[in-house]
Length: 114
Image 1: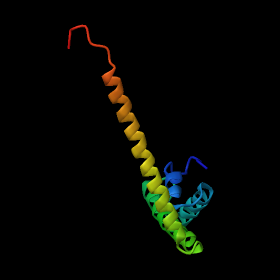
Image 2: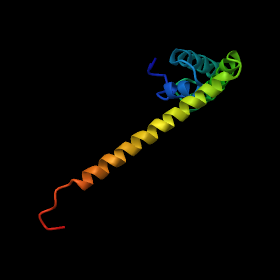
Image 3: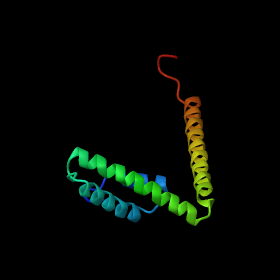
Image 4: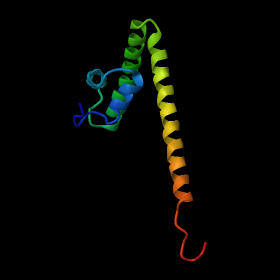
């Protein structure tokens, strides 16, 4: 999926929109075609900005289409996954804190008596 002209944040945008990486790559190619049709060159900053603008609109439209196809349950599923990710992050942070605290309790006394 990562050709020289594919943005590196495309997989992140795809996950955020809830679509596959392959579909995101196809939408990126469509966004580049639309930007070129407007007269922007592919490898210029203005062309890249125009392509990203088209990509964001295409991703939003595709995400809405996917949401409608599931009759509104897809946003709830994505919310539940985000909450689960947050809970796992909290558990990981809590375990790191407790491990550091235990290491501090069982640390050998220093040679200077502190």
